[in-house]
Image 1: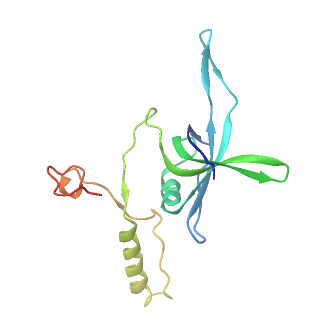
Image 2 (image 1 turned 180 degrees about the horizontal axis):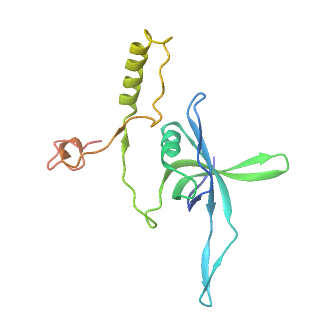
Image 3 (image 1 turned 90 degrees about the vertical axis):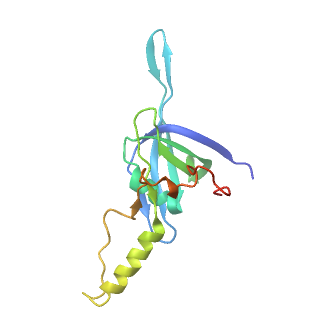
Length: 166
């Protein structure tokens, strides 16, 4: 099957919407404008709008990280979706990130195993409490931020690794 792989630079037009029925799924709109300079003036082309779709861990990370008006880069596959009498271009994302040409970002690795273990432990301890209900953490999955004082945890910064980290 032929697929069109692209990377689109633009701005999030909506906040991502995350659905957790089954495999996590997130969607948001992405607007991209081409700017050209003519006779000393900047001219904007019409905005190209894409519906971005992501699944699994990428969907959860997008929902926690991207907000409306954020400058983003989205890599993925263009998939035409037919709706009655029109065709919409949908971007099935394989990677989403901030556009660092317009700002800075700090990466935080998500440790979903730790979050699942904590949720399971909370469910067990909460089962004997008020009807077994456990309140969800509004902050989302636990984030394990990298401590620069502990470089031995990062296999890519080790001085002389015995074997490749992958």
